[in-house]
Length: 76
Length: 172
Image (tube, rainbow over all chains, first blue to last red):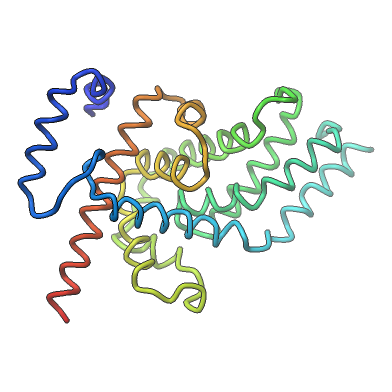
């Protein structure tokens, strides 16, 4: 894909500016990363909420059981 | 026979289980498969205890094992894994009483439609709290690549979420 071009992006400021100018002709204001700050915040909050919700769930007992089993067979 | 590991190592594995699981679920969108992935990761980590250097970043090491396991498995069964639109989100959904907003549904659907590498980068940086350097090491690519993946992921999500909002306004 065009990842190689993307790597050069920080150096070619002019190009980045042109791109954001193009997109700012769209209907919403775009911030530094191409998104309005409000939308960026929203995405950040949703991401963390999704992740933290899961991370706060108790882990399945089989995880701990696995470690117990491994520990026991290592002791033998 | 599995090696004898230090109590310290075992305790650290236990400590990281929950966030490993959150990462697995965000990556593959399937709770059952995610739990299998974590199980496999724990097993591999334990078996390769020798190759972990005490004092280095265990969390990053575990995340690396998990994502490598996920991607190599995914390559193996590519056809099976081809996911129909929205299926990911349907399976990922948390119990509705936890966050019964359409908001989160839309978000998950949008997240699921991102290319794998972009979703991975976004979750590592935006949710799991890794630095760009750590995320690059975990994903085995350059820091600049991670940055551009995160940017593209954000832009894409932004476009999709905006669209959803616009549609909702039309319907209402």
